Length: 160
Length: 292
Image (cartoon, rainbow over all chains, first blue to last red; front, side, top):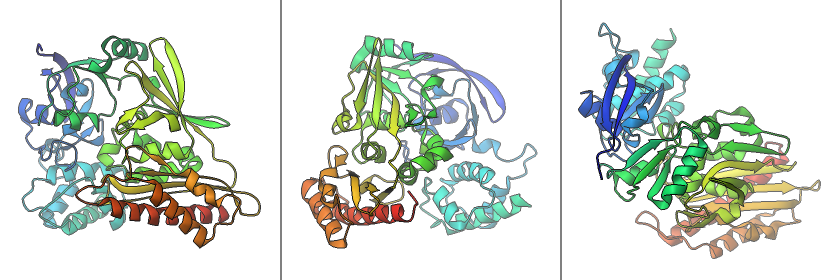
């Protein structure tokens, strides 16, 4: 079969970009290999682990379960865009640091993208709700407790 | 893991999507939420030659209530179902089942029509639509027909859809007055495939006797299982514990779960029985306490 290429324009972390992609390229691979945004991690590549979670038009999705070509005319946010332009951490990033919410860090970008969107919509979650919201992101190091603590602390700080 | 090569076409209208499917048949797949299709393509279990992306066809999404029914567009995402307060009020069974479907990130993309067309027997919505007596509007290029949920799921991952057809809309009849519902599921982890799941829809007459019962299961066979005939033991009765236990035993006798490394068929049968008892009991309590 001939290569099936498509021109796509999309906005990534606020910047518009135009690229040619093969239709079978996954969005996760596009972000990492074509745009050099290797902060989006790739774990299972079939939608189970959550490491590749990004925001697609503001909502958390698995980048490994979308095609790059589907991002045409859409807006994407990745971990590289989470801190402010001057380098100040997002409150959730700071809280993960403060509460030792990561060890190897492989799952962390996916968790930060998932939970930053979650806190935007749910500013005052209970601990049980935070655990439910985290259920789509696997972490094999922390046992989750410190991640939950960090999210609760970030929620407190963001409400002030 | 990367998909094999394919040709991608973003359809801009339903007519275009149906024309493409009519031309290419089984060689082509519709891409809706992609939350089951893309993983199977990543594993190369599926290698469609052509992907017809229907995400740009706005008319296919949306929830349209009317006096007797609610119609849900096939491209409506789980997230939209979860956030519709009228739907949650009218069909608490759906609201109770949705949190069991994978995870928030998946629910942001996955669609009701994609789920039903994929027809995974462990999935919740096939059993839910069966319990609610839904029917499905199906279109081909110059044809349209309605399929009852009870005729739609014909085998493992197999539906009654012809190669040129698309499921475009789901019609849910409103619950009868004095109806209580309950969905329960056991999975190894939150969001995993069901070891067994049970949906119960119980309608009572004014003596609190069961006048109509629908009971369906997921995860315990090649298709969603309609066990309403087993539950009919309760018709005309106030359901006693013994009678509900008899229904559970009848359900256990009629199912033939496949088992897996995580759950033997006997264990699945056991779980199906326990959930049947609990779900029927709770659905009944909910009518009596007016909680639907």
